[in-house]
Amino acid sequence: MSKTVKLVSPIDGSVYIEREVLSRDDAFAAAARARAAQPAWATRPIQERIDLVLRANEIIGQQTERMATELAHQMGRPVRYGGEYGGFNERVRYMAGIAESALAPIEVEDSDAFKRQIKRIPHGVVMVVAPWNYPYMTAINTIAPALMAGNTVILKHAAQTLKVGEHLAEAFVAAGVPADVFQNVVLDHETTSELIGKRAVNFVNFTGSVGGGQAMEQAAAGTFIPVSTELGGKDPGYVRADAGLDKAVDTLMDGAMFNSGQCCCGIERIYVHESLYDAFVEKAVAWVNNGLKLGNPLDKETTIGPMANVRFAKEVRAQIEEALADGAVAHIAKSPADDGGAYVTPQILTNVNHDMRVMRDESFGPVVGIMPVKDDEEAVALMNDCQFGLTASIWTADAAKAEEIGDRIETGTVFMNRCDYLDPALCWTGCKDTGRGAGLSILGIQALTRPKSYHLRKA
Image (cartoon, rainbow, N blue to C red; front, side, top):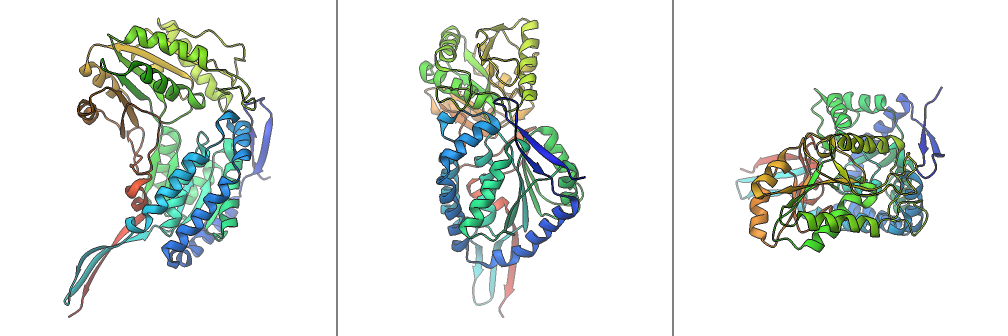
């Protein structure tokens, strides 16, 4: 009997769509088709590959209303935010603009005696295992540069956002990318691991949980297949005494609550200089009470929708309840829309400490803890007291001090006076349990290739 995946909508708990999982034989056949198609794809002129990716981007851009509505049904983001095409388009176009130069050979010598150079060679078949929280943008981070670099792509999207994978495949095929060059597949964990372990693919990009990343690396053990991982974070914000308070509150709270807190680089803990602490907390509470409306994401008045799945909401509530039992103070009254299921009241906690899971474990939901600190030393120590290292946000009027502090933080990206943004010109990377890898930027496109050296003696 064939397996199926059911996508349960967080709006009302109903089954939104159901899809059949590929059998092991069909999955390996798909990988074989991708491998067979890759050499011809790689020999196409790079500008032709870039143009086809850009055309697929245009097609996706014609579907923004459908995108927003379907994302609301699949993972709960309010339709008022209009989907993800802004970031999607920005990333595709930036990578298209740097692809040719990033992939150009490095010329060491071209004389009468020798030609020496290093070329960038596509890995072959790139498997993208994409998450549900920003399902278009996270997937395109790898799909676009992988195709531009001459790889073929197999996309396995999250069960919570199955339609996104289907629409991406439709767009790329409609743009003229051969069907075997970009394939969307529905796989179970066992078949995914076997495709990796049997070397049916040549490179894996995974965004998801720490456990999922460990499973990918375990599947690849001994194969020498590169595995790039981005496994979330517990990202801190630090508000120094010289910070602009109103802007810090507005941006950090948006970074904590947007998408119901379901952002890998969302703000999950905030440290505020003691001189600004009381005012920051007061303004943050007002920001939530006056600016957020929990409700059905199909309603344009809703500013914060349900979490993507009841089980995610259960973990957030557990962290909050444990913290309250240990002395934390909650500042937001329960919302009438909070149903005890996927709809979770956004919460601000004070009197918190690092013995509490809410300040230590990834919450991935609409809750943030705020602590006072006496100086930079205490803030740095607290920011580094974490198993994750994705981004950190520093709020100050002193750029030199921000860079100095940033040099001491164990993180992949340092922000000053902003947060929760992925700049396609900069490398998206992390450390510690956030995983390892390089996304976007010149480093991201080069990571989707391998170096190959040529030492040609002419005489």
